[in-house]
Length: 167
Image 1 (cartoon, one colour):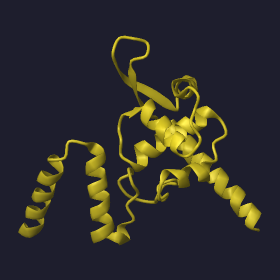
Image 2 (image 1 turned 180 degrees about the horizontal axis):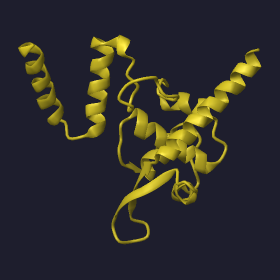
Image 3 (image 1 turned 60 degrees about the vertical axis):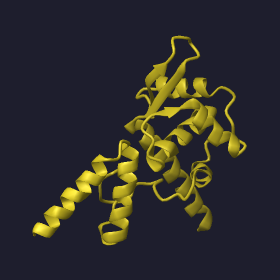
């Protein structure tokens, strides 16, 4: 019993040394998959059944699975990937559009695409910060729970279409 408590204290100290929530999540997820694979930890969920979208090896795989048609949905899928799979808590438009451009799906005005997702009810994206006073200041965004559900619905919808074609 004392050994378990000592290990927990050492683990807590090691995790406290990480200043990024995403880094802590990746370490915990790695440890759970290595030492307790039967637990079935879902990334970002704390346990239980794995959520749709958590098993994609890379962003292009997720993008292909969701097949977003509009610039707003492309931006949402990119934001979802960086937040849930990469553990980034605050997202910037440059990072998101660069990921899209690298696949040949860049968005003409990424800020407008993200703003469109912010104006939906419920909002799928939130602006959580801005640096600089100018209109062009660097903005920070975060995917809302409604945004996560929207991307997961895209994955589910595309998966169901794929299953119908296989039948």
